[in-house]
Image (cartoon, rainbow, N blue to C red):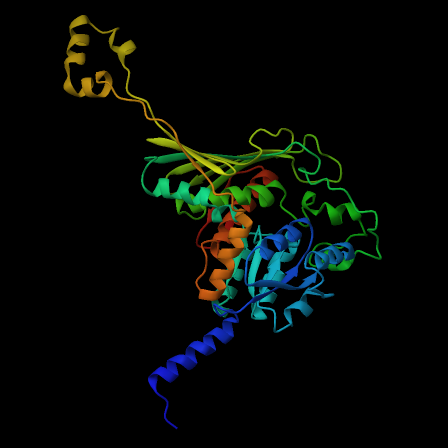
Length: 430
């Protein structure tokens, strides 16, 4: 039997689409692994994207499963174990919204099962897990996108456009903060009254973490404990570093020095409630990261990008470019010179141009976003990458780099030393 070239190409394309499971006109079936507070926010964002259906949910607390199914209008099914969800050949993609200590294992298992993966930040619980996930996704041809949604906002995209256009000049300093001043902001969440050993699968929650007795505070406030989380570093600094890496087209910092303390929120907690970190990048700029749960100034993610020609202030919904309206002013210096030397100085044409000629002040420029929820946009980018098989910017490599910044920060805090990044080994060194 003979096959024409057109028929061969058509068959190959059909096979590729079958393998990807997400042809442009097909609906994408999504399985949720973890349906806690963030997981259910993600579910609502998915449902605002046409062409995607949540068909299965899995969680180790029954109350969350019931509420998640309710959010789908009863259309999603409950799956007792995440591996049962991965075994469903009709599921195209999974969303991993579990505690951090599960991310590596679930991501690798999902990739091995042929699923595309949306993994909430941080991608990793330890820095050394990143290269393994990157290799697995690349080898299997799977899309893996990490959930720091800010980079999908039109505000951050406009900020990057201004930076790439050279509007800021040479950038040498970036400051970023993420502050809160409530118990829930410090992860001291209320515990539902129906939570008990009968409704919470404690062993499934622990998984690869150290074995401990049943503890509802650890279960519902897991971000407060080193066994399951990296605290402020992996929950908030990862967002900040993701944005900075996106804006600056960079990867890992070369070294990090950090300090963290637990000042106030000492109930059910191990990790600091206040954290400061200094990051140095080989590209020639430094970053100051800070977060406290004891004051709400700079509530949400606030960025200040400082350049020789201007600065950027980036917040929720707006980006403001502030041009540098500065000029040399050496009057107070040369007025102490001999009179003839001062006169000669002011007669120099270069000095006149730099210090005396009038220059109009430039006004700030404000960009306001269109109001689209960044998480909704982030999922739109994920689903588009599934259809095109072209990875979005925040792939496994970007996720690894951002998470590793948090791991460097925590290493420095806990060891009380400068943390260096060994690029050749993808590991932290003192």
